[in-house]
Amino acid sequence: MALLKLPKYVELPGGVAPVIGCKAGDVAPLVILTNFRDHVRRCEALLDEVTFRTYDAGWEVSTITGTHRGTPVTVSSAGIGAGQTANVLEELINLGGKIFIQIGATGAIQERIAMGDVVIPAAAVRDEGTTRYYAPEKYPAVSDYRVVAALAERARKAGNTVHTGIIRTTDGFYASQRIEEYVQQYHDLGVLSVEQEVAAILTIASARGCYAGATLMVIGNLVTGEHSFNGDRQDLVENEWFDQTRFALDALLDLKEQLL
Image (cartoon, rainbow, N blue to C red; front, top):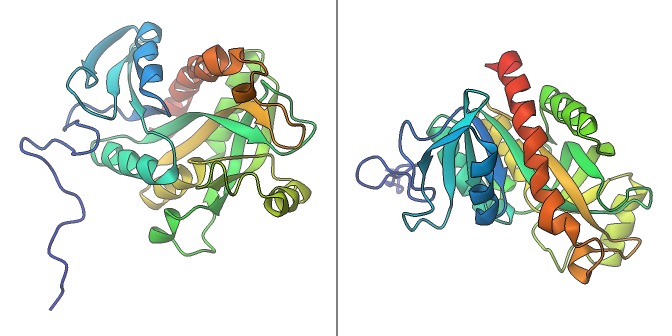
């Protein structure tokens, strides 16, 4: 007899997803994921109108749904780290999310990548703990090539210097991102940068038949020593990180025509 009786996905009364506080009809097929609740609030100014929001209802995860050039779009704060992001992503998929773009930040590990550049991951090293529950170690975390192409084109049109390639996702902001042997190894392998969510987003989206990618603002460089959190280019965390949302919204509309 099987021991486990709790279903894989649980709901609160009324069909409300317990992490994001949304129910059927609240989530659009096109979704922006961001780290911070404040970014969700700021997105209201970028949308034509907002028809749904959760941040005034006491939910830890902030979610809004509105329209961009007449097309429904959802923006949700997935938090920091693969574990929380996975929870949010699972529930968004359950409620109809289909194409996902992460708006994030990253620390470069190549000298040629400058502060303020944009990294569009083609794939991510699964150096975190969450995705082992979804797929074996040899399963790759790969962005959909159409998402990479759409994001890179829109980012360049917006005036950004863009790098595409492999990044590394890790659980440890302080530990594993700052151990010399890890930085050296992945630097020598040509990995562009390191962050904490993308491998989970790519793996889960692929496993569940969705499409995903990310745009990452370079706010630090581990091998040159520059970092916004140390006071270098503070404008990157105050404005540019969020401003990726503008071209990501346009990329979502491009992808809708291709994928849905």
